[in-house]
Image (cartoon, rainbow, N blue to C red; front, side):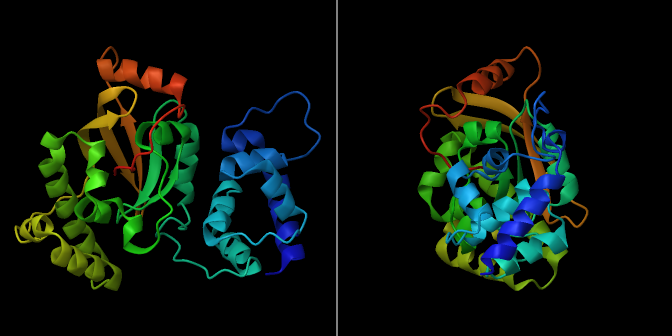
Length: 285
């Protein structure tokens, strides 16, 4: 790891970002041209002390997840993001996949502006890449799993606890929708070994998945009506919308409810209580 260069690059990228670019108030008294250190830390989900140590070139060695979070917080383009990974001494992950994937700029720009509704960016294999605060409050913090377990779809068929986010009478609908979506993704990606491994493993581990896969149903998940079980607010009925990146490998999901409905009132309350005293839950997609 090249600590001095890593630190200098972080500071140079921080200096060029205006608070308004990332949805932060400008404020009347700013002594720095770009973001403050604590603002970058907040955007990346890090402590201010930890980020300060990174920018000072201390002995801290950030994980791949931390580097990816910094790349998103600092709105790095593809070349800059790869450079940051190289300086950190970490292998550069695929640009669009997994929890360390780089969010497509257009999707991230939209996510920044969705401040009053839960929203998150996932991959086409249902791996959560980034969430806004209301998404965390609604469905829980994204997991730190790597490999297949990073996929909510994979956990849906292999970890019974994952299903607690939906009422039992919705489980079959969700299962069928996940499988039809995965078949569409598999066709889009062609002979992709990552998808082939996931399908093979799920067919081996889940009789339900194997049976549904055998029906050959195919349908990308574009919109859906969901009943999400929240630990404090109970069942919340919401509409889930999807916006796909140009290559189809990432999706911006956001949740809404018609004005005047109980779901809308629950979302209003969610924005007040946030993540206070909430039980950990998995992130649906």
